[in-house]
Amino acid sequence: MKHSFIEVDPESHFPIQNLPYGVFQPRSGGAPRIGVAIGEYVLDLSVLDDAGYFSQTSIAGKEVFQQPSLNKFMALGRTAWKEVRTIIQQVLSSEEPTLRDNEALRNVALLRQGDIDLLLPVQIGDYTDFYASKNHAENVGTMFRGKENALMPNWTHLPVGYHGRASSIVLSGTDVSRPQGQMKPSDATEPLFGPSLQLDFELELGWFIGPGNKQGEPIAIEQAEDQIFGLVLVNDWSARDIQAWEYQPLGPFLAKNFATSISPWVVPLDALEPFRIEGPLQDPEPLPYLRQHGKCSYDIHLEAYLEAEGINSQRISTSNFRYLYWSMAQQITHHTVGGCNLRPGDLLASGTISGPEKETRGCLLELTWRGTDPIILDNGVERVWLEDGDRLTITGWCQGDGYRIGFGDVTGRITSC
Ligand code: CA
Image (tube, rainbow, N blue to C red; front, side, top):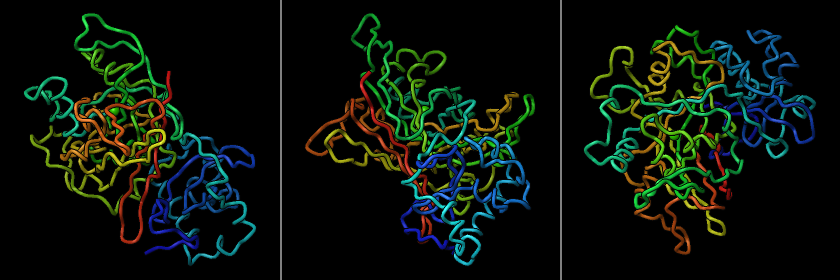
């Protein structure tokens, strides 16, 4: 097993096997630039680049790390990503002296995570949200349309999705203001306007697109994974009362476009390779353009925590990426099959990741069964929807033998509107 000369706790999310990318600014000043997380440190890649560490690679002279976003690096594609990752792992390894024994370089290249501010890692041009968990789609469909119509006839034939809103994607830690909108309670004869009273979270993972494709040139399923630069945790905040009134026939609009939170560290797809597993059996077999064989999913443990003001944070959901019915590659291929172009930095997200058991449900809508089965927090405090002052945090990791490939977390607190 690889070790770094930097000590990393076995439960740390950021061992040498992970090396997620982020955009940061030192608190002491200086322009935003790109680094990777290692234990409790950040390795400043712009410093390594200036010191010539990447001079023999395809990124030489391109200044991809002296940037306020990862877009330029992401656009270069998998070969460049692999070259860079190999060098960073080598530089940080316990056997390699060039950084380990160079105190002057260490002092400028390694910063404590407490001495930096993380920024949104990507300039996100377009955001697409899917609906790829069968358990989630069945549960929501049952609540909104009854058990007989739970899954729409198209659901097992194509990855259902909608075009989301990139402008309101915020970094973890940003407060989320309760949205206002129209809603029509079941006992009301006319719609009302006001603050949403059914504010929810959605536990999701998202992935950033690398080079992308030209308009009119779809991405074949065999090439789709090469487009995935890396993954982040996503909380796709949702206003269920607004959603229930507005969603037909074109899907959610204001119910979901007010805010989406993402975690700051982008975990490279290559770091997840040891945790590749088979996804759920797909029956009926998808059409040929969506057919994929072998291990198309990943074993990523996911948790959601709710913290009400003055009450201890409590785990309310334990899910896993493996529950997703449609794979990331299938979602990418379907997205582009009609000719739509994806661009570097586009974000695609999975939709709420729910499993078969009650505790694996990935949103309050399902966990409280549309408000009829409250969650009991400490001191007997009940929750069916998010209230002002509540904090929702999602975390996740792959558990290796003595190490974790972690995603850090995505957190946000609800404020009144
Ligand atoms: Ca969603």
